[in-house]
Image (cartoon, rainbow, N blue to C red; front, side, top):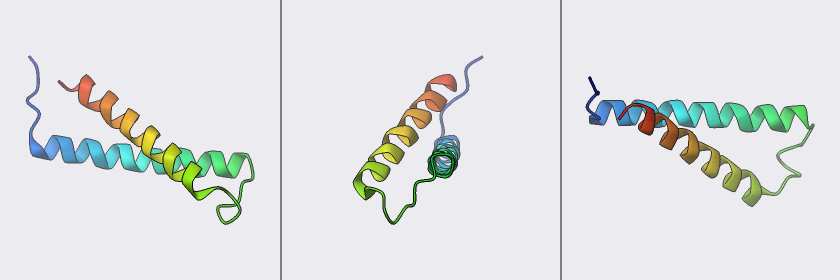
Length: 64
């Protein structure tokens, strides 16, 4: 039986994707020893947006 997508589920999936994307970005910055102040802010924000939206889309499609 398929779950219904309600407001609470969508918001919780968005929060999960946000937290996971922040963790992945900071993990990669740590692994490659990249300082946030010296990196390209547009590239970091673009990478975060793309990663977060991909995770959110994956979670939404899995719960439809």
